[in-house]
Image (cartoon, rainbow, N blue to C red):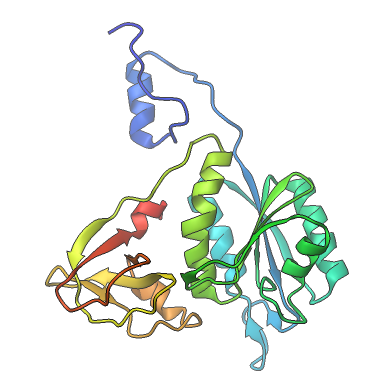
Length: 259
């Protein structure tokens, strides 16, 4: 009917939405500017691929930049910062000038070379630090010169998981889309697991041929192959009981995270 709303405010436009708008006789609609999100890696040990054999390859930066693109934001590559407080501060300054939000990886824990969390804390910018989530305990949330900062862990699996669980909904809210919880569904567990109390857990997983939630063979945060193998996450809330095979568990496909 004439005057009936076609799409709500904050809706992320998809190809089928453009068809609906066109069929409704609209050739222009008001939209928000794309959010600019900067990505920074930290660590003297890192090298870009292929890198020398003894180097630790920076896998986080290409992964996070691709996530930003997949979510419809404009990525800003800040490169790598040395394990030096001045270098980290300069990179954050540049990120705040060029972007609306910054994703860092590494340097968010409590070691002598963890300059991201130390720099944010020294400037009084740190608003939250460390979370009871596996993988991803060293997560830093802050604001730097008007830009939101998500200090992600250095381990690739933890960086990926925290980006999906924490950064994506916040970035969508900043972009004007509102807060969105990823949709999941219950499946019988294809595994058994003894739970450690006091933390929420996310397991890389996929759906087996029998329709069960099957986790990756290892929970190690450095095994990037598990990210490529998996098609979603098993969400084990806290508090929660031990898991026996066949128990219902929550499976969230990566498609629910915009991937």
